[in-house]
Amino acid sequence: MNHQPRHRSARRILALAVVGAFGLAACGGDDVAKAPVAESASNSAAFGLVLPQQALELSGNIDVTVIDVRTPEEFAEGHIDGATMIDFYEASFSDDIAALDHDGTYLLYCRSGNRSGQTAALMQQLGFDQVYDMEGGVVAYSGQGLPLVP
Image (tube, rainbow, N blue to C red; front, top):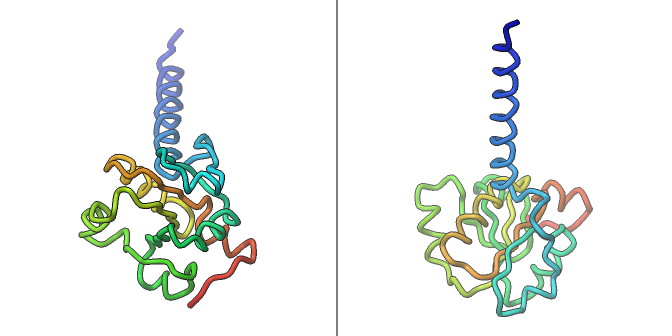
């Protein structure tokens, strides 16, 4: 009895599971705790996903810097009021992020959560203390009827 195909199949499934786990981590998967809005003012390190409604509340806080990591074209289509655009695809992106105040509080978003999730992970590696990633990005935000500005 030859078990070779079964072993290949098991390896393939394991490989897909590992890739999927890393993919979810990079996108800010559901296993990351949802950060309550009240935590944004604390002095302890805080990283996590926030729901679109929480993002709207955070964006109204003068102590929170809202960063849109989409392209200029996407930003022009509509963004959260007061957001600063730092294009994820620019060659200087990592340097631009690293130059931010590491003690500040940041709300990140993109189109769907992928680029902002990767940015949150980068910021955590760089030693930032307070970084929140909006779950679902602009797609989820506008899907809930929340306001974007041109």
